[in-house]
Length: 141
Image (cartoon, rainbow, N blue to C red):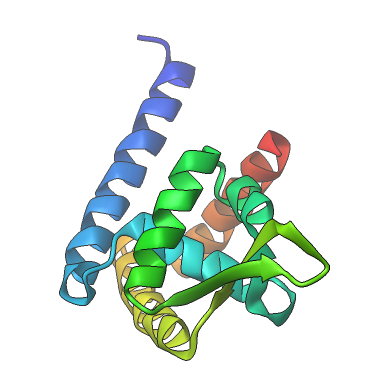
């Protein structure tokens, strides 16, 4: 098989492994990788609040998937959702203090997992690898 086609396969394998490790680490908190991704995404919005549409776009998932994620997180007390005071048709989602605490724990888990992933590389190779990933990612957006 052509080398360039193996690249996508390897990226998917790495992603799947990272997601599996993340899900196993977060199982204690009754969270999934996708749910934590939503929480971490909310942290980056002003006032740590976003519309459902903004969250959907940031997560690259369908509206129905976003609604399901938000509903589960709200049930766990990690986000609040409410109508926009200026336009009740718009639903806003905001992370709670409990959600922020989950993010801190998830970030610690992610650091450990990434350290394990990058451990076979020298410091210079790690910098190059991350730089190349950013370059490829930027090209996709």
